[in-house]
Amino acid sequence: MDEPQSLTEESLESYYKNPDYHMTDYLEPRGGWKTFNQFFARSLKPGVRPIAEPSNPVVVVSPADSTFDGWADINDGKITFPDGSSTIELKGITWDISELLRGSQHADAFKNGTFMHMFLSSKNYHREHAPVAGEVLEAFKIQGQVYQEIALDKKKRPYLVRPLPLPGAGDVLDSTVPVGRDRAGYQWCQMRGLVVLKTEGFGLVAVLPIGMAQVSSVMLTAQKGVTLAKGEELSYFQFGGSDIVVVFEKRVTFSAERNIPYRVGEKIGTFRQ
Image (cartoon, rainbow, N blue to C red; front, side, top):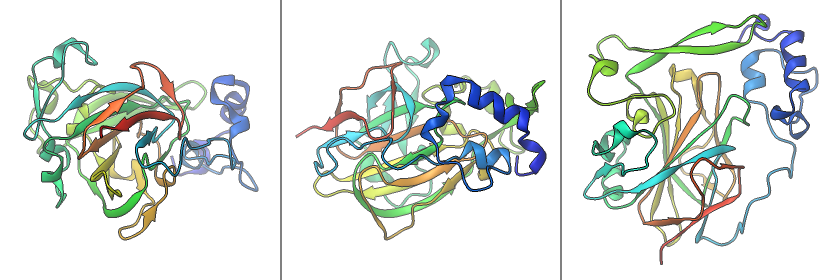
């Protein structure tokens, strides 16, 4: 996806003609996009995603142009997705938050917090932003347990075919734990980025862009020691990334509704006080 032949004039024209891509929102670089990954990670024009209440630390905003897929409280380091979660098969399955945050020195801080999941479509803007303001304590990638088979359609546009286990990962896809793509719980098996933010007064917030493919599908722009404003960019996807999880140390009340799309910077919830 980094070769010039990965993005043809024909495929680019099809994106411009499709109103679902909202191409007028994007800043086309001088000379145009040279590869599909450059196009996939295209940047927005300034001001097209206003940030809700940027100076109010209580307000949590959407970290991506994505569809809200729900939330769950974390109790003693475990998450059990309730009835009405993404898939019926997830009911009653317990997930360990420390494994999701594998390698983080701050994993224990989230033992009684809140988990939130949103997913992106191929038509969405593929850069991710801070849902709250905070200092970056950690920023690194976590290797997953599956990768994706990729193919091209008749117009030479790439698409995902199926997930495959990484060598040595065991029977990840044949286990009793469902790993359906874009479903809460699938993220435990995927390559992912991890950015941990320290907020003023509301503890830690972990943002995890989910690669769902090889390590290079998530690119972190946030750097340890830097303080990000609410809505400031922290990562972007190349082809293969399409999911985002946020884990909060403190409990959050969400105003966002499941299966409803939200844009970067739109209010989706507030910290419980």
